[in-house]
Image (tube, rainbow, N blue to C red; front, top):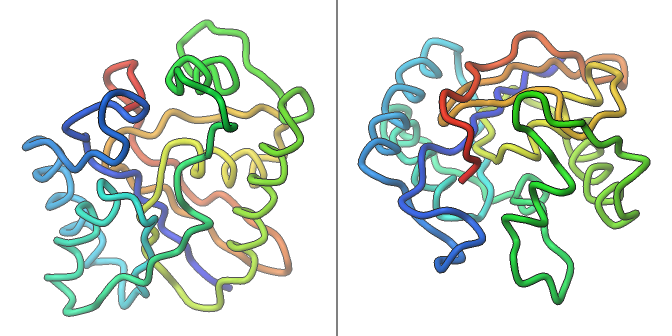
Length: 190
Protein backbone atom coordinates (compact mmCIF):
# COMPACT_ATOMS: atom_id res chain seq x y z
CA UNK A 1 0.00 0.00 0.00
CA UNK A 2 1.21 3.49 -0.89
CA UNK A 3 -0.08 6.66 0.76
CA UNK A 4 -0.34 9.79 -1.37
CA UNK A 5 -0.98 13.15 0.23
CA UNK A 6 -2.13 15.56 -2.50
CA UNK A 7 -1.61 19.13 -1.39
CA UNK A 8 -3.27 21.85 -3.39
CA UNK A 9 -0.97 24.84 -3.83
CA UNK A 10 -1.41 27.85 -1.54
CA UNK A 11 -3.22 30.97 -2.63
CA UNK A 12 -1.41 32.47 -5.64
CA UNK A 13 -0.60 36.14 -6.04
CA UNK A 14 -2.54 36.20 -9.32
CA UNK A 15 -5.16 34.03 -11.00
CA UNK A 16 -4.00 31.27 -13.33
CA UNK A 17 -5.03 32.11 -16.83
CA UNK A 18 -4.89 35.84 -16.18
CA UNK A 19 -2.06 38.21 -17.04
CA UNK A 20 0.53 36.00 -15.30
CA UNK A 21 1.10 32.49 -16.69
CA UNK A 22 2.92 31.08 -13.67
CA UNK A 23 2.16 33.10 -10.52
CA UNK A 24 3.91 32.53 -7.21
CA UNK A 25 2.20 32.56 -3.83
CA UNK A 26 0.55 35.50 -2.14
CA UNK A 27 1.47 36.36 1.45
CA UNK A 28 -1.52 34.30 2.60
CA UNK A 29 -0.38 31.46 0.34
CA UNK A 30 3.04 31.37 2.03
CA UNK A 31 1.35 31.11 5.44
CA UNK A 32 -0.89 28.30 4.13
CA UNK A 33 2.19 26.46 2.84
CA UNK A 34 3.82 26.69 6.28
CA UNK A 35 0.68 25.27 7.92
CA UNK A 36 0.54 22.39 5.43
CA UNK A 37 4.22 21.62 6.04
CA UNK A 38 3.61 21.44 9.80
CA UNK A 39 0.72 19.00 9.26
CA UNK A 40 2.66 16.86 6.78
CA UNK A 41 5.68 16.39 9.05
CA UNK A 42 3.48 14.29 11.32
CA UNK A 43 2.63 11.88 8.48
CA UNK A 44 6.00 10.15 8.54
CA UNK A 45 8.81 10.12 6.00
CA UNK A 46 7.47 11.13 2.60
CA UNK A 47 8.96 11.55 -0.85
CA UNK A 48 8.33 15.08 -2.13
CA UNK A 49 6.85 15.53 -5.59
CA UNK A 50 5.70 18.80 -7.14
CA UNK A 51 4.06 20.17 -10.21
CA UNK A 52 6.55 22.32 -12.10
CA UNK A 53 4.31 25.36 -11.59
CA UNK A 54 5.77 28.04 -9.34
CA UNK A 55 2.83 28.12 -6.90
CA UNK A 56 3.27 24.39 -6.22
CA UNK A 57 7.04 24.56 -5.85
CA UNK A 58 6.66 27.48 -3.42
CA UNK A 59 4.03 25.51 -1.46
CA UNK A 60 6.44 22.56 -1.23
CA UNK A 61 9.38 24.70 -0.02
CA UNK A 62 8.47 24.83 3.70
CA UNK A 63 8.08 21.05 3.79
CA UNK A 64 11.44 20.65 2.08
CA UNK A 65 13.05 22.90 4.69
CA UNK A 66 11.45 21.03 7.59
CA UNK A 67 12.47 17.61 6.31
CA UNK A 68 15.73 18.39 4.54
CA UNK A 69 14.27 16.81 1.41
CA UNK A 70 14.09 18.09 -2.13
CA UNK A 71 11.16 18.01 -4.53
CA UNK A 72 11.17 15.90 -7.62
CA UNK A 73 9.30 17.80 -10.33
CA UNK A 74 6.51 15.66 -11.75
CA UNK A 75 4.91 17.02 -14.92
CA UNK A 76 1.92 14.65 -14.71
CA UNK A 77 0.55 16.42 -11.61
CA UNK A 78 0.75 19.85 -13.22
CA UNK A 79 -2.09 22.13 -14.19
CA UNK A 80 -4.55 20.85 -16.77
CA UNK A 81 -3.58 22.29 -20.14
CA UNK A 82 -6.03 24.34 -22.21
CA UNK A 83 -6.06 23.60 -25.93
CA UNK A 84 -4.02 25.76 -28.29
CA UNK A 85 -5.99 28.83 -29.30
CA UNK A 86 -7.92 29.21 -26.04
CA UNK A 87 -7.39 32.82 -25.03
CA UNK A 88 -9.59 32.91 -21.91
CA UNK A 89 -8.30 29.98 -19.88
CA UNK A 90 -10.38 30.83 -16.82
CA UNK A 91 -13.64 30.64 -18.80
CA UNK A 92 -12.48 27.43 -20.47
CA UNK A 93 -11.64 25.93 -17.08
CA UNK A 94 -15.02 26.91 -15.61
CA UNK A 95 -16.83 25.51 -18.68
CA UNK A 96 -15.14 22.10 -18.50
CA UNK A 97 -14.83 21.84 -14.74
CA UNK A 98 -17.75 23.76 -13.16
CA UNK A 99 -17.13 23.89 -9.41
CA UNK A 100 -19.52 26.57 -8.17
CA UNK A 101 -22.22 25.41 -5.74
CA UNK A 102 -25.36 24.55 -7.66
CA UNK A 103 -23.61 24.46 -11.05
CA UNK A 104 -24.41 21.46 -13.22
CA UNK A 105 -21.43 19.12 -13.11
CA UNK A 106 -19.77 17.83 -16.26
CA UNK A 107 -18.90 14.21 -16.80
CA UNK A 108 -15.53 13.04 -18.05
CA UNK A 109 -17.31 11.43 -21.01
CA UNK A 110 -18.57 14.90 -22.04
CA UNK A 111 -15.20 16.66 -22.18
CA UNK A 112 -12.66 16.69 -24.98
CA UNK A 113 -10.81 13.36 -25.38
CA UNK A 114 -7.52 15.19 -24.70
CA UNK A 115 -8.81 16.03 -21.20
CA UNK A 116 -9.70 12.40 -20.57
CA UNK A 117 -6.21 11.41 -21.70
CA UNK A 118 -4.77 13.99 -19.27
CA UNK A 119 -6.89 12.53 -16.43
CA UNK A 120 -5.79 9.02 -17.36
CA UNK A 121 -2.13 10.08 -17.22
CA UNK A 122 -2.64 11.49 -13.70
CA UNK A 123 -4.31 8.27 -12.58
CA UNK A 124 -1.68 6.08 -14.25
CA UNK A 125 1.07 8.07 -12.56
CA UNK A 126 -0.58 7.67 -9.13
CA UNK A 127 -0.97 3.92 -9.61
CA UNK A 128 2.74 3.67 -10.34
CA UNK A 129 4.03 5.57 -7.30
CA UNK A 130 5.85 3.04 -5.12
CA UNK A 131 6.50 5.01 -1.93
CA UNK A 132 4.53 7.28 0.37
CA UNK A 133 4.64 10.83 -0.96
CA UNK A 134 3.60 14.43 -0.44
CA UNK A 135 2.47 15.66 -3.85
CA UNK A 136 2.07 19.41 -4.41
CA UNK A 137 -0.48 19.81 -7.17
CA UNK A 138 -3.62 21.55 -8.43
CA UNK A 139 -7.39 21.66 -7.98
CA UNK A 140 -8.22 19.73 -11.18
CA UNK A 141 -5.50 17.09 -10.75
CA UNK A 142 -6.77 16.37 -7.23
CA UNK A 143 -10.27 16.02 -8.68
CA UNK A 144 -8.99 13.63 -11.35
CA UNK A 145 -7.76 11.29 -8.61
CA UNK A 146 -10.74 11.88 -6.31
CA UNK A 147 -13.29 11.15 -9.04
CA UNK A 148 -11.45 7.92 -9.86
CA UNK A 149 -11.25 6.92 -6.20
CA UNK A 150 -14.94 7.74 -5.68
CA UNK A 151 -15.90 5.84 -8.86
CA UNK A 152 -17.57 9.01 -10.16
CA UNK A 153 -17.74 10.22 -13.75
CA UNK A 154 -18.05 13.87 -12.65
CA UNK A 155 -15.07 16.10 -13.41
CA UNK A 156 -15.47 17.88 -10.06
CA UNK A 157 -16.21 15.84 -6.94
CA UNK A 158 -14.51 18.04 -4.35
CA UNK A 159 -13.40 21.65 -3.95
CA UNK A 160 -10.02 21.49 -2.20
CA UNK A 161 -9.02 24.68 -0.43
CA UNK A 162 -5.62 26.29 -0.72
CA UNK A 163 -2.89 24.11 0.80
CA UNK A 164 -5.47 21.50 1.81
CA UNK A 165 -4.28 17.91 2.11
CA UNK A 166 -6.28 15.10 0.47
CA UNK A 167 -5.15 11.60 1.35
CA UNK A 168 -5.28 8.60 -0.99
CA UNK A 169 -4.09 5.02 -0.74
CA UNK A 170 -2.95 3.02 -3.72
CA UNK A 171 -3.45 -0.68 -3.16
CA UNK A 172 -4.22 -3.71 -5.27
CA UNK A 173 -4.11 -1.63 -8.46
CA UNK A 174 -6.73 0.85 -7.30
CA UNK A 175 -6.85 4.35 -5.84
CA UNK A 176 -8.84 4.71 -2.65
CA UNK A 177 -9.85 7.98 -1.02
CA UNK A 178 -8.91 8.09 2.66
CA UNK A 179 -9.83 11.67 3.46
CA UNK A 180 -10.71 14.81 1.54
CA UNK A 181 -8.83 17.97 2.42
CA UNK A 182 -10.54 21.11 3.65
CA UNK A 183 -12.87 22.70 1.12
CA UNK A 184 -12.52 26.13 -0.47
CA UNK A 185 -13.85 29.05 1.48
CA UNK A 186 -14.05 31.38 -1.51
CA UNK A 187 -15.41 30.33 -4.86
CA UNK A 188 -12.60 31.37 -7.18
CA UNK A 189 -10.11 28.81 -8.40
CA UNK A 190 -6.77 30.60 -8.84
